[in-house]
Amino acid sequence: MKPGILIIGTADTKADELLFMQQCVQEGGGSAYIMDVGVLGQPRFAPAYANTEVAAAAGTTLQAIAALGDENAAMTQMAQGAVALALQLHGQGHVHGLLALGGTMGTDLALDVTAALPLGMPKFVVSTVAYSHLIPPDRIAPDLMMILWAGGLYGLNEICRSILAQAAGAVLGACRAVQPASLQRPMVAISSLGSSNLKYMLRLKPELEQRGYEVAVFHSTGMGGHAIESLAAQRRLVAVLDLCLQEVGNEVHGSVVTSGPSRLTTAGALGIPQIVAPGALDMIDMQTWKPVPAVYADRLYHAHNRLIASVAMTPAERAQAAHAVGARLAQAKGPTAFVLPRGGIQGWDREGQPLHDPLGLAALAAALREAVRPPVEWSEVQAHINDPPFADAVLAIFDRWVAKGLIPPGQQAS
Image (tube, rainbow, N blue to C red; front, top):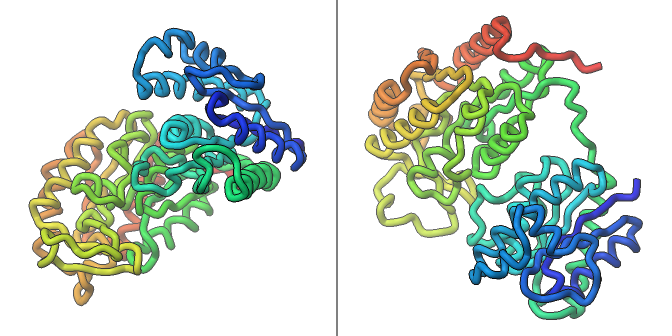
């Protein structure tokens, strides 16, 4: 295969860099097509897709965008056009991977384009703010690759060439190595944490696979939940077992470990069946490598590793998180069930563990009973979330929905 790589950048200010990456792609055996997303200047070469075409794809003209007189508004409109044009080119089979270059402005636009393209299409962004806290997690495509554009803000140099060449090689290699999803079996998503904390997937995954489903388990530490929302938006999922809502609680209480405000909304909005449980909806995550904020100084605390630590929520904070869950589930248009494990909701809340808080657990359960209302199907299990009866209760609902035709039947792999 000769991969087609779409290269996005502002051709008026970054012509040398864009042309260098095009050369790298071509020398590596790929085809490279530059899309110019600049607004004001005229490039010294003819891009494959001119900025006038990008503006037209946004339903406007380049002159109208320039006349806005505001660089943020102008680039936002160009981003709309770049998304539409990139999706069209991918759908037509012309491009197989994407390579974008930018400072904050170009990165802002590139994040929109990469988030819109299908999961599994190689995407690489060269950015002056790669991995920066300026980039909110919910704007990062789940499969996005990034590299810091070090020393390249103005003109080419040895450092810049090395980085741009790596990026070109990376996206080319990804296009050659990618294994497109066959979609032979319907896919079910499960949210969880690592098995040291939540273990239900150890039973659920093999059981669902035996029923003929492809099962993907997502780590609910920010990007994992974002990936679930992205797959749901692409209608790649037939059901979501959203059994770990830690990211929702983190979002409510301002933690950096968040998937953004859309978490727990996409599947419901699209009518995708979802079975929900409050896994880990009792703690707030933070960076281990930062001092514990004074407001949390007297809380139960657990450092999971040198990156992430957690404190227990107060009863009031648990109630806030519970009502956020209830409000999101109330908007669901498809079958929705909520399973409450009365014996505990994560591994560290068992007796003898660092976040054991029976009164807090009771407060959360009471708040959830109040917040989660019909038509959401409610059930309770007299067990801990890590005990077999919880997983069995989830499977019972899943099987009942399959029997009723609410979830498509599984397909055994050929």
